[in-house]
Image (cartoon, rainbow, N blue to C red; front, side, top):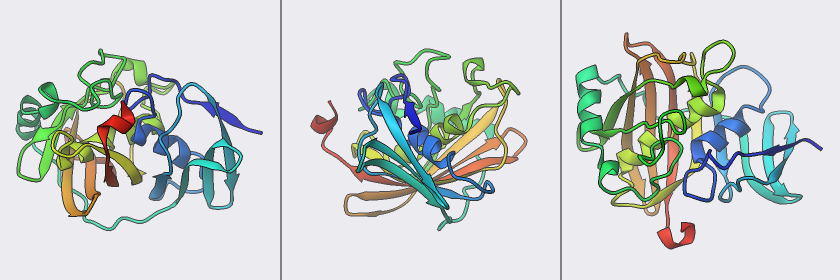
Length: 238
């Protein structure tokens, strides 16, 4: 039986896994070409305990125990157009306006928490550049580089995750990731200047539909994602 333990530092809310990181872990277990992959979370991902893999033709499932599904991944498709790259000036203005500096429901989040130090969290701080769009510059820290100098797949998914949440505005609507579809075209290398963008596409009751993209400074699309976020009661995640 193949197992994995998610290191507690890869958290979103304080005691559960970062949605993008865990979705990337699960999606990374799928066999086949790097086409879009969709990962869905069924329950808050546990940290620091052994979890069980169940894999087959065209699917990967992460289990807390036999029959208790944490999340699944299958081949996926995109529904919306990819967001265009922000300019560096727009991205810098977005970070200056980052709402999480003043009010953050998950301040220790691996991706966007301001309480994380350099090399401990990604410190990806996307703020508004329009009514429905957020952006920020971001460079991967050397702590997240693999042997070839590029960042790993789960780290890339984590970087593509939270900008969508900030486009929906965590401070107005406490939300957690329910589903994410992503495709990676090139993983950036340590220290490479990147431009992150996220947009809110629509809302349907408790669900917020967002999309994100990561570009090189020269405008190369490195990866894109679409997410479905679910509004929550913060007391359930305290």
